[in-house]
Image 1 (cartoon, helix red, strand yellow):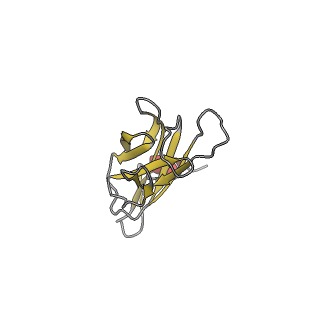
Image 2: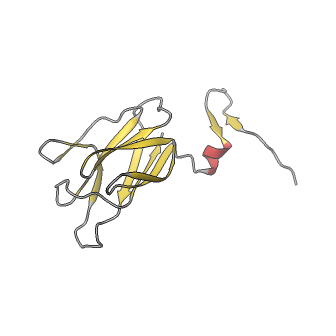
Length: 134
């Protein structure tokens, strides 16, 4: 049986590369699993250096290495509070001063999100997960 050992793979033009670590992680360019209650803390992450807690249920995920453009896809989910029957929604965007959602532009260094229930941003989540693909 043959074996190939490399640290970086490149396409035929040599301009696009992936490390073996990126490939083994499923090629998500950034991901994070964090506790959004109290003092926000990262449980596990890749290419995420911090979480900014703006106010209740309003977070920014800050990337360790910037993306080339802000045209990436961010997918996020969160857990409910106290297993109640009120569904919570995690939206990519930011909160206005009126505590209602509005869309925001992604940046190359961060993505902002808010958790709402019945359209009101009012509850932190014990588990927030975000994955970013480019």
